[in-house]
Amino acid sequence: MTKKQRYLLWFLIAVTSLFPLIFWYHSGKLIYIGDLNYPLNPWLYWSAKLTQTWNDTFPGGATHSQAPSLLLYQAIPALLDRLRVNLSFAQILTYTFWLALPSITIVFFAEELRKRLDLTVIFTYAAVVLYQFNIYRMIMFGDAAHMVIWAALPLVAGLLMGAERLRSYRLALLAGLAMLLAAPAGPNPPMYV
Image (cartoon, rainbow, N blue to C red; front, side, top):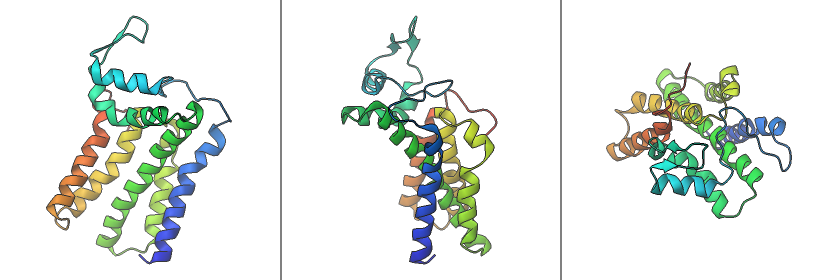
């Protein structure tokens, strides 16, 4: 892939990641409905997962038994909260990250497949667009389990395809990242993936 093609690919990733935000966000307003689990006090929510086994912020309380799996997913809003980023802008940044990450992991998978099958770079571009813009992805956006699996699956598939070619430390690092990404889906697995 040439430098120009790589720049075009990163531009495509940026555009596909930001595109839904054009329609979904209005200045100063939060998206908070259904399975979108964006805490209104992200730092308190995240730090409680580190120190408590019972969460009394829900009516009647709730167990934190799945808390360790959500630490990475909830760390981004918590960090933005500590940096005093406005809550609605922090939500935009968080969801932009979770929209961009699958585009990056699908590039890893598509490049492995492209090299193996000797395809043109247009295959990688098409993979990014098709992976980002499909009906299921748009409907299930926002749920932690779906977002993390959507990011982890191409990484795992790419690792399986390129395992013999990768150095052991890189393979271990990427496999660990894939497991860390997929962890929030463990307690509440997504349907219809």
